Image 1 (cartoon, rainbow, N blue to C red):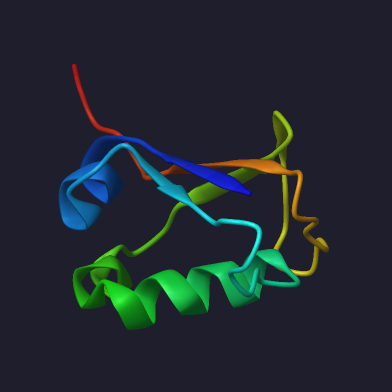
Image 2: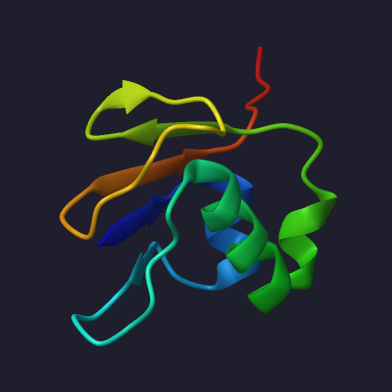
Length: 80
């Protein structure tokens, strides 16, 4: 499973991706993934909102995840 990180999420984690190997326990849902990331990277919990895409489609917290999924964490953006 590959988790791509953008914006402030990338800054908090310190990398542009999180890779789960074949031996790692993978989260079963989007909400479990968010919880796992927040536990590993406490600054992640400070994000007031974020979008999650699973295989290029926006996903709600209850969407199940598979080891072969590509996930993107997209925090809110601002600009002018």
